[in-house]
Each structure stands twice: as C-alpha cells, then as structure tokens.
Length: 412
Image (cartoon, rainbow, N blue to C red; front, side, top):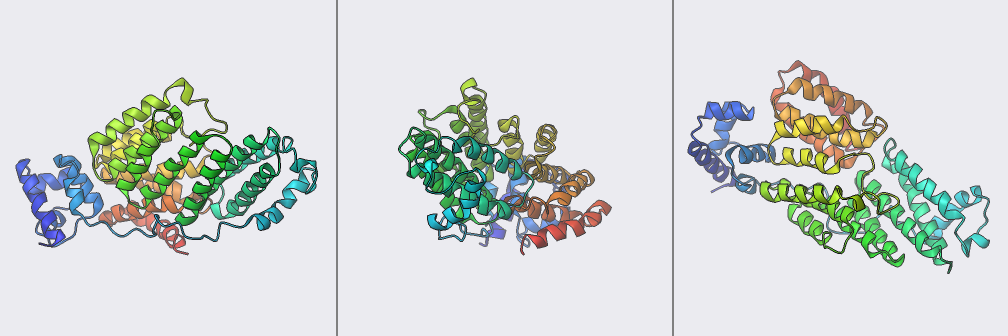
C-alpha cells in the first residue's frame, strides 16, 4: 500500500472513531472538504502541516505524522565539509591588521605578549556586531566576524599572561556567533565548523561548560534540517546536572522543539516545563558574560512554547502565545522580530485568520531584504503553502507579489 493510501485509511479510521463527519472535520481544521476526501481515499498526499493538525485534533500522538514522507532537506546538515567561510590564520591576521592599527597597536608589539588592553575593545566590538546582526545581512558581517575570531585567538596563543584564558573565551563567543551568522546565510556546513571551533576555544580557555553550548547550537542546525531525533539527542547531551542552569534550560527548549517536530506532545511539554524552571533560576540569569543565547526575547521559554504549539498542530494556542510574546520584543531587533513574527503569521493563517496573518506578514516582508535569513525562509515557504489554500482572499492576492520576491531572493 502506498504512503498516501496508508495515511488516508488511518485518517479515516481515526476520524470515524472520533464520531466526526467529513464536513465537521473540515470545518474544525479549516481545510476544504473535497481535499480531505481525496486525502482519505489516497488520491492526494497529505502535507506535513495537515498531518500535524490532524494528529493534534484526533489525539494520534504523532502517528499520522510518521506516515507522511517528509521532503528531503535542502542541504545535508550532518556532514561538515570544507567551507568557503573558514579561512586560515595567516589570511585572517592580515585582514585583522586594520582593526589592530585602529587601536593604536602594531603587529609584533607588546599587545601580542599582553593582550589585556585589547580585550575591552574586542568585547565592545562583539556587542556591536551582535547588535548589527539584528539589522544587517549575515554575509556582510561574516568576513569581519571570522577575522576578529582569528585575531583574538592568535593574540591569546602568543601570550602567557593571565589574559590568555579570557581572550580564548571571548574568541569562542565570536566563533559561536560566526556559526550562527553562517547558518543564517544558508551555509550549514560552515555553521557546524565554526560551532566546533567555538567548543575547542572554550575548552582551551578552561571553560568546559561554555563548550557544551555548542551542542545546543548544533541541535539548531539539525532542527532546521528536519532531523527531530538528532535534535533531541544533541539537546539531551547538554542537560547533564553539572552544567550551568542557563545552558541546560536552553538545551531543554531545543529538545522540546525536536519533540514538537514529530508530534510528541507530552515529551515536548515536559521539556518546556524543565526549560522554564531552569531559566527562571537566579543563577541562570547572570552566569556568563556575554549572555549565552538570545538577548532580545524576555521570556525564552514562553516564546518557545508558542513556537512548539504550532508544530504540535495547535495553531490557535500558538497564535495567542506568540501574539503576547512578540509584543514584548524590542523594535530594533529586526532579525528576532521576523523569526518569531513569521511563525506568528503562520499560526494565524492555520487558524483561519487569513487577513490578520497577511497583515503581519506584509510588515515583515518589507524588512526581510535588510535581514535575509535562510532559517526564517523555511517559515516563509510554509506560510506561502498555507496561504495558497485561500487564493480567493483579497488579502492573500495583495500579499503574493511581496511574498514571491522574498522567496525568489532566497534562491539567488
């Protein structure tokens, strides 16, 4: 029996067991009755979105999702191949010379044996680059981030002073952020390579805990690659009791997202509860400098709950949470606002609130050229598929040109 026939037969069985007519079912899901009828007869393939919603409504605990053949991911996120983003120490030292001269230093001078005066300047640069990452294309920032990472690591390698460890740890944070920007630029292999480098630099600086955050970052790569099992496995490795509570809390959030991806609702909600408890602890709020993880989301566990509720097939509940949490985001955090804003629009569209979803998306599409994002594009594509069911809507018709432009630019 083909996948479509198998899914359709199981869907019909579960619907009938629930005592629902096809009309009642279609109204509840905001899907066309004729389309659902074809899905049940095996004449049409069910999308992952439909399977997710049916799972949640019928209480199938992920069984329907597992019957849907997921499309192949756009890139293999498991193989760390050589990347054009990763450059050698000699080249980066050359690229970083200008930054050092700006600080009134010369290569070969005393700074290379005692980098203490440099650290506050590089630390300030990190904060500025992180802020720029909210409103600048990642490919613009990547060369500078790579250069600064290598320069700081080189300075640390050439000194024996007490500043060596802090310099290595700061280089680790630069490397981790470089990995995130590489992922935003659509280069998963480079993201993994830089994340691995961040781990090595942190350990060399004497902080094995900071290196464990690399597991959480790697889990984000697998999450966007659609690998739920890999995401959960990596996130669990970063939750051992000896790790700081913030790292464990962020890892628990990532585990929840992995469970949500395949409809494992109970495991997802347990992970979210664990994340909330860990991130609410006083020692989770002031353990690291710079702050590990997002600095723009005031309640990460709540925002992740909204994110997961959509993947669990509960768009109305997701929209309520995301509406509340998105209102709390700072205006300047464009990248964060688009990330969660498109998920919010998607939740409203899936709830049948098409005009409101288009209003939200229209505002976000206007800023996408300033903050292009390979990861956000995944939700933009999902939104386009969701809205394609409402082609008769004037709001959808008006949104199509802007939506098409963003989707076309993602392939350039």
